[in-house]
Length: 174
Image 1 (cartoon, rainbow, N blue to C red):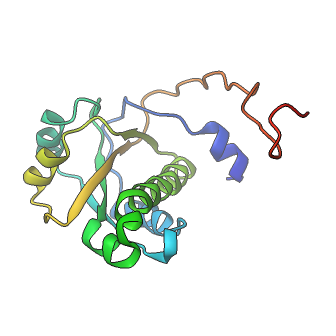
Image 2: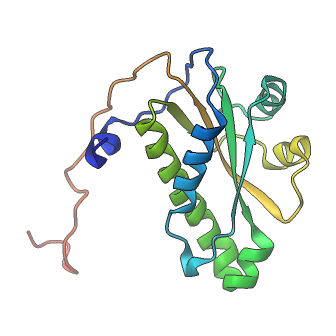
């Protein structure tokens, strides 16, 4: 798949077919995530993969943004102790969330290229997810990604271009 096709074609999908995603496919998506940029090359991201429908249902209880019945939920996390050790306060408070977002974008594009639908979820109770999944205290869930074969193909929303591009230091120049 051509890069621009993936960038423009990927959508947030919340309705999934009842079809399993293979472990090999999931591993390819996680590999794509780990090739994302990382501030100071810290690479402190961690990924918790849920494929058991019972576990996914439990996580949905504390995740109002997790809709539909995805085959997989990936919890994108950061090891904040390592992030602080490698990058100080900036590593923990700024670089870790940015790195998680960049890794997630790679994962989303790779999933789309594999014919999968995804949705990034920020509306979830972090502590609740951590407790349910027994995630160590030093590991902080940042985002959830629901994943599966799409039962829908949402159309692209309009993209605003006016006022988005600013060239140079002078905002008034053309």
